[in-house]
Image 1: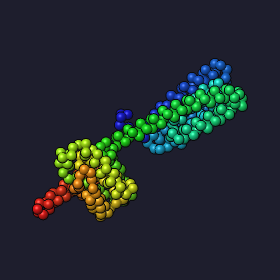
Image 2: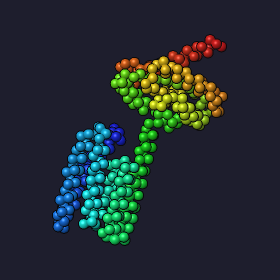
Image 3: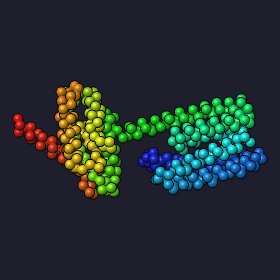
Image 4: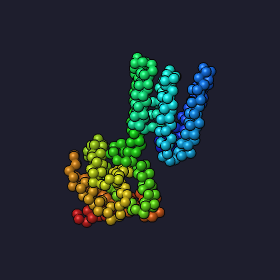
Length: 328
């Protein structure tokens, strides 16, 4: 079940679990404080338990909406503020509580926001300890907090890079750099739904590299693997912002054009085809392309649109072959 969840769907669920686990952890801490006779501290920390439970329920109920930030920011700031408020009276205990803030904040907040909050907490904590405990204690605590903060930041940054890398691997074709077939269907379904709501046109362009297998036999797979990224880059340079290039097969590329009528797609297709065929490619003297364009019809889904585009592309190829044979 978890494998079918996207990161946007999984993160609120993980935050809900963490908040629910944090509530009994604070309850255990309160019991220890009660045994030590720190009754005022018990009462102040008791506020965090209903806050955490309420936050977990709120995030879970709104897990399909981008509203968790309205809880994560005030919750993180509130917990940090409570610890700083009691730092002067209970420096040892509150220092250890604040040491948990970096990992919690980097889990709940974006990297930049969590870093800013932690730096502000570090500065305030050092100043308060300097005023009440002396410079040596403030310096030692500040260094320890900085080391913990640096470790948490590195972990969060590496996780962000890993997620971005996994997302790129999941969405892109590793040879050409274009988006892959799976992302093509997801994007097209999204654009179809958007067009039905906004009444805007969506068009497709199909590009097929002629004699692809013959080019591989002559030049080898390595040369073709070096050629395809340049082909994708040159195609991307000729389309609008918001248009996307997808690789659906070895020799087959498709372009999704939101807010573009069929006649506009036809003009763009001819310009792309002419520019790519006239461009000098190394080590090829030239390449030949077959191209087709179409506009989506109401009620058409992504699978039907792909089939109709491929049918038009095959028809275009047959017409080009017949024309070449007639010319000879």
